Length: 578
Image (tube, rainbow, N blue to C red; front, side, top):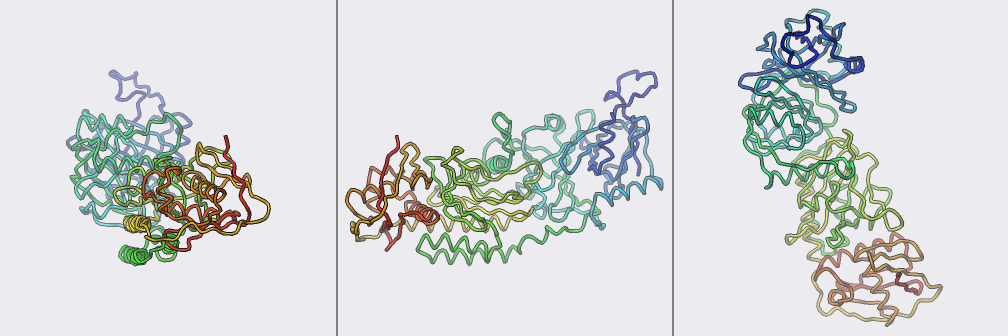
């Protein structure tokens, strides 16, 4: 089918016209843009202020650049092509899929009819350039629950609305959010024209695409309400804050509300593409959750927190297939998360930091909910933000150079976020809902296990002295303003672990002691621990791993539970920096 739209210099056309002369409204740059392999989306007025939406399969610009021939499949888009009339308003959106540069053209329908042979060839050429091999499917109603892959934001959705005069408008949506089997939510951030149209008519048509298979679905939406708090709002807000580009201060990424729509109809669009290779990335959901349950059971049987962290990271790689993973501990006092272990990176990154509230890792900690991002390529790079000032006190956070998928799950125990379990992958659409459930379960298991490891061991020995080490002293410089600690002018660590190590070295210098108990450290007011049992055991693990990684002249060992032993190869020379 061919629809011919005559484009006037003003829209709607001004009364009285312009003496029959049609001035070109498409300049040379836009005309050149149309010759690219652009995505074509169109909307026409529908019944009851509900616009009809569809995708074009080719276009041709008139010689005087005042008319546009748009090719649309009747079989694929019957709602849009079934009730056309001359003079009807329509909107055409053209987008370059490589960078999403987009133009919208609005016009009146001048004529329409069947495509001729040349136009059919033009359509076949367009489809061949821009689409995978397609196969037909019957049109049918669908359940939202079966469309969860469409709500990942991997492929932008399209929303069409009409104003009270029936003039359509088309916009792109970064993501449609699943609420339940009868409702979806859209984030109210920009799209002022869309918002005004919905306020006038209460209706919208949305086209969503399955990022795994390429199947398209048309949703008939009726606006119900806008929410500014609650679970749905918090979930969407967390997702947006985790995925927005870091454009700098003043960028208006604030979520005003989550707009809830009832889905009045949901239909599969015919002629879907063949499933791409990305469909094969995810594991079978049942097998994945079974593997996660077995790993959680092993963690539950482990009492050593050090072994617990290593077993989890090894299991994520070996049994769940997560090639890159990190465990980070929360330091609420400093607003940071600190790496305690990782797998899959050239640098271990023990002691590196992410800010709470920034990036997928930080937002998972701040919101106490899992964050899953499956496409980070559309002009965005959402790696977790490295904390701290630039310079000598920063350890690089492990990370892929070009991650496409990220998944972060909060480690929650006793109502508090203890840290974050994080995985990422260089492939799009790597993590499914089942992956999110699996990682969330393991994060909770690790948080509970680390908390139980903080239990005291009554009657532990303490205070043992060892012969003073010989050799050239090593220099230890401690900065009290951020508890950062340097050994021989090389940065080691900051925060509570830095404070702990300097305190232990100071006690050793004063008394010669090399053995200490967890209990005495918790009761020692000079350490200013945030509160009783605030991850002391986990912070000692972090400190031990960082000392081992740097091959420092002082190490920490654990002769038994609840005891800390200092091993020094040379005597320390302590300095408090002013």
